[in-house]
Length: 267
Image (cartoon, rainbow, N blue to C red; front, side, top):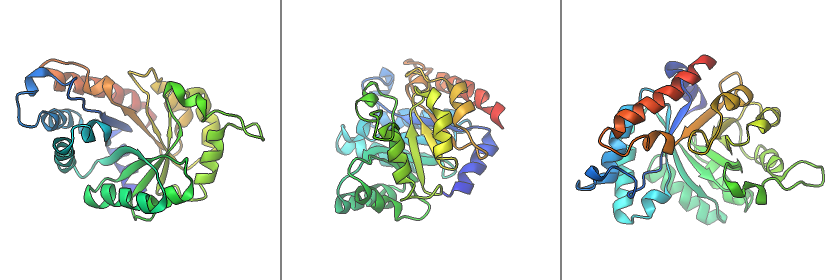
């Protein structure tokens, strides 16, 4: 998907919501477990309930590959079911030597036709560049994450006093343009977004951590947005597990609607 098409979907729906499909076989409603493919059925109902309110879906690949062949089959069916109007992100956090990254890129961009994949930058340019070779496909580079251990490396001050994640962003911007490179920036660090926007004024930010992880949507929207919105805000557990009963899809829709209505004021 092109940058223009992504922005058009945002304007159409007055939304920059990404729904994370972190579908855990142990957390989905029990009545689905009797079905042949409970993971896909859960995803299908979540998609039906939220597709008018969000502009992207982000399956977390670990939840699928942990189930072996059946998990991959559920993921493939999910990808086929997501409307083509929606931006799709493989939350795979890949990143390896060049020839291996090339195979990862082939897997997610060619075989499964995702629009984007999350990539770890620790091994440098040769681990990232194979993903950037595809037209209208995106690298979403891990920069400042929302997990507790993010301070272990990402925030370490460098010789110029700037934290490591700033240097990661600055270097990566030499590799990929705003038309194919985004950054993962966690919502649990909203006080940093104003500075991050000055560093990367045109690049999209994928912002996880809203909802279950305590991120503040209003703060993120205020400090992280640019003239083209420039942010995808992800919510996973707060939407898909809004209920564990037979009304799970209805509750997911209500949770997504609440977020979308808060987002609409930015348009």
